[in-house]
Image 1 (tube, rainbow, N blue to C red):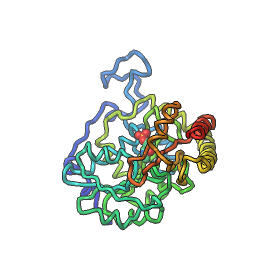
Image 2: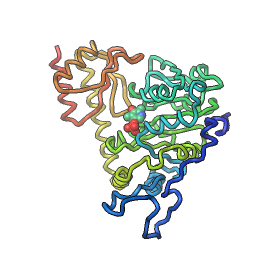
Image 3: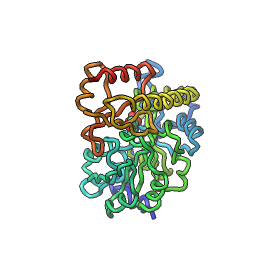
Image 4: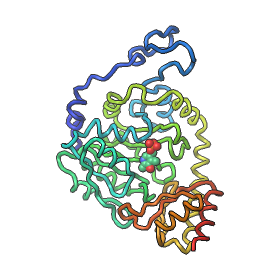
Length: 346
Ligand SMILES: *Cc1c(COP(=O)(O)O)cnc(C)c1O
């Protein structure tokens, strides 16, 4: 049974009366003279503060994602949504979080910034996790658990049955990072948001949407959880240019679908080519737009590739990833340069 939100949220956040911006207090399109926000009347349209709750964008995203707009938080990348989870729910030096290991590095960094204990539960040799072991690592002060599926840097989907078990048995919030779900055949847990009051799903415009530059991340959860996020976020956390570009991408959704199809095909092709390379020992199967490979000597090959002007991610020092490189799938030409360079590697 999930704890009540009141039990989960930090006491100071529960008591907080949020900042009320000019654009919060007046929302309506009919007015034509805006003298409420100390803006400069010149340099239209960038002179105006943006919509603090991104209403238009959320309305359109809600349709695409099949969730109510009240269940959407938008932030300065998913990274903002991760950081806000700590700030809203984890009392520094008292509460803790549990996460799979290895996984995306930002969860641990945000824990450290917020002075919150971060408990790592190692994945098994197939990079799968056990809900039971996550629960064993938890105690009465565990507020959040972090899962990432497909996981970064391993590239595999986590077992959905195990995710469901964790959602049912953990009394805090489960943050499920689906940054790479567009590339996976697994259905998103978004469809089941109503079923799990303790579920927070993270998605992003940075990967499949091709918009890493605009910094736009999404968190989906119950309206109550999103209410907590909205209460503590910076008033104008998503700038106007970002909101506009995101709206434009929504109108070009067919293009995202096309990119995803191309990248998935290319991933499968490049993975096959990698299996034939002498310096490659193992190619881990991927459901994302990158894949992990175990090579003969990760540090040496990484440095060799840098010399060739090709940058991959060296994951050698990450748990379970000894001698592993993480390869992002690029264009066919980019992938070919990489493969050709590796063929030349003695
Ligand atoms: C790339 C990535 C993100 C995206 O973060 P943004 O701040 O939205 O760019 C989130 N989670 C994981 C696991 C990632 O690999």
